[in-house]
Length: 101
Image 1 (cartoon, rainbow, N blue to C red):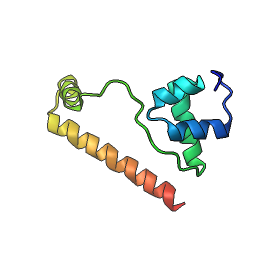
Image 2: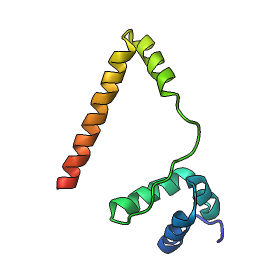
Image 3: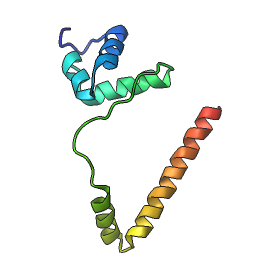
C-alpha cells in the first residue's frame, strides 16, 4: 500500500483490523498515529465496530502522578483518588445518557 494520506475507507478498515497497534496502522497507511486513532474513533461512532487498540507510548505512573498532584494542591492522595473516581462516574453517566438517546 502506498504511503499516502489518502486511504480509502476499505483500505483503512482492512489495515486496522489486521494490525496489532496504532503505530502499525500509521506505518502502513502513512497517517499520523493520532489521525489513525481519530479516524477509527469516528468510524466507531458511526456504527462500524472496529477493535480498540492502545495508542502506544509510555505508560503513565498513575500513583506518582496522583502523589504529585496532591502535593501541588496541598491535599491528600486519597482526596485526589476520590476526585478521580468522581470524574470517572461522571464520564460513565454521560456515556450512559448518550446510549439511551
